[in-house]
Image: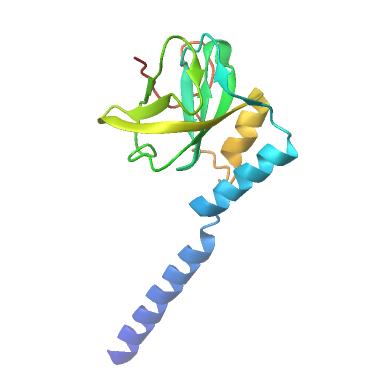
Length: 164
């Protein structure tokens, strides 16, 4: 009986060890560094504002970055200043802005469950769709079951949006 318990314990430890080794994801800090390097190597154009901005979709990257899609599925890399609670678990986001322009350092993003918490937009970079896809792939392993949901236009996206 003692040998059985010992083998069971060793088997359980081995399973935990292998599960830990199988995790290939990057930490949030490593992802932030990778996104910063991507901005530098791709020479992404920084813009202080987006005229006639209409939120059409979004992708959560990590606590510091997300991709917003405007009309015509034009992607922008958004850096957030400070902590934005529950953004990684939210199915929708909203935007506090003045007028139709989205402006860094003045406008903010919020999670509908926490509408008074403003996540200030620190910077905005223009992206191509291909760059947005490559950013989304950083730190993630491609799996067959990770297929994105299609929106009404047949474009891939998995998050809802709200705007005020």
